[in-house]
Length: 79
Image 1: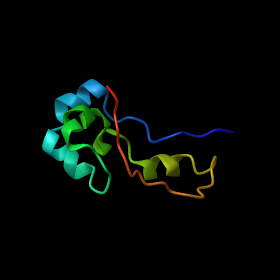
Image 2: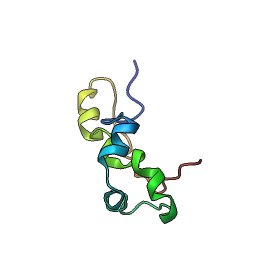
Image 3: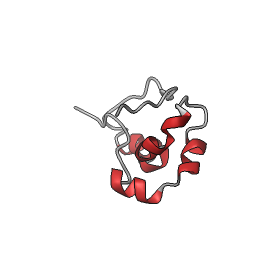
Image 4: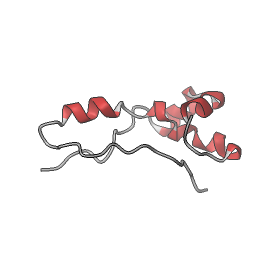
């Protein structure tokens, strides 16, 4: 048996860069540490470009038992 290792992307990286505004990224990362100088590089990692993890987990509930829900505390993207 196996399951998803994450929610998966809802938008490709190029679509995310085209559709996501920089100011929205900071709002979406509320509670997660980001380097304010790197906001432009984090657009394609914004939470809104990923599928809803709750829906993904519901879809595979016959494969997994949820024991922990992790919350991101840092988003860093190297160049």
